[in-house]
Image (cartoon, rainbow, N blue to C red; front, side, top):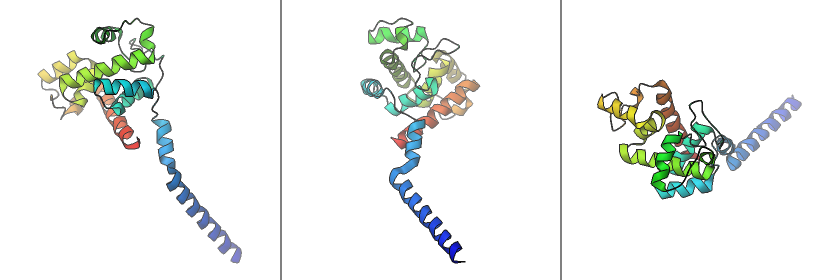
Length: 185
C-alpha cells in the first residue's frame, strides 16, 4: 500500500513538472513554428513592407503553394515559392522593372518580389483578401466572371460559393494558415 502511494505521488510530481515545463517552454508554439515556418524572412519582410501586404499572408501563400521549396514547379508550370505562371510573372516584372526568365523566376528574391507585388495588385483591385486569393489561384478572368454572374460577391461575403473546388479549397487553406501565422508570430 505504501509503495502504491509513493508511486502515485511520483506520478503526480512528474505530471506537475511536465505541466510547468510545458507552460514555460510552450511546446505547442515550438511545434507550430516548425509546421508553419518563416523562411526567407528578409525577402518576405522587404517586399511585404514595399507592397503593403501583411507578411503573414505571404507566408501562408508560400506554405500552401510550395511549402517553402524554391524549386517547386507545378504540373501547370507555375514556378517557385509563390508558384507564379510565367506570363503573369512577366507582366508583373514589367511593372517592377526587373528582367526575368524561366530560370531566375525560381530565385527566392525574384519570386517573392513578383508574387508579393501580384497579390498586392489583386488586393487593391478587389479590395478584399478572400477574392484576391481566389484570383491568385483561378485568375482574375474567372473571378471577374463569377462576380458578374453573382456566383460570388465582390465583398467576399459568400466566398464559399467559388465554383472551382480547387480554388474554393485553396482560399480556405490560405485563410486558415494566415490565421495560424498571425496567432503564433
